[in-house]
Picture 1: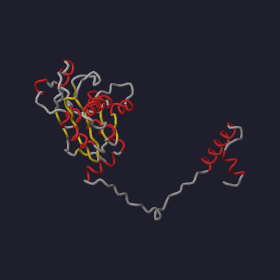
Picture 2: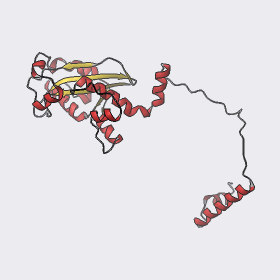
Picture 3: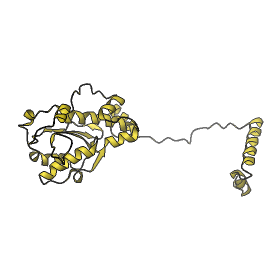
Amino acid sequence: MRQIFLDTETTGLSAEAGDRVIEIGCIEMLNRRLSGNNLHVYLNPERPNSEGAFAIHGLSDEFLADKPLFASVADELLAYLRGAEVIIHNAAFDIGFLNHELRRVDRPKLDSVVAQVTDSLFMAREMFPGKANSLDALCRRLEVDSSHRELHGALLDAGLLAEVYIRMTRGQDSLVIDAAESHDTTELRVEALDFAALDLLVIEADEAEAAAHAQMLAELDKASGGRTAWRVLVTDGVA
């Protein structure tokens, strides 16, 4: 299973209003293990940052001025993401921006190229209803160390998201993970047990216990108006 954790930084909050992508960070995970095959690019947005966006990511117009245009990395990005499950926190935002960029250079939408888009924000809201579920909040709740995160960064945030996702989903297959980590294998083998040779001890009820059980059944029968199932079974000769 190939999963890509993706994050972007942008010049502002609205692709429809002309804001552009300035950074893309992708972390690859194969069978729930980080592969190291990551993708990270800074982009020249051909327009200035908004003050609010700069305060979040700290990527100045001067820093981005000599970076490549999106058109020069579009094919590489699509090839990297093709066929993978892409996991994004608040996916609608990043997918919306990337699809705008892809449309500018006459490329297909991202969601038509990848196998699946998973929104980790939606997952978190289902898992922690009524609580703050930003990436920062999830890092605190799930004890993921984000102390080195002074500003937002696409690759940094994608890496934090990968750690958060693993902790959110670990309960689904924790035995598989533990076995893989302990024995360096992705396959679990469970040997069949032969119970034929076991001598099972049978303890029968004594008279007092049998009488107490009979009294309890009688009370249940009375409470149900004589409609208890065991009387029907005994009458039909099943018991």
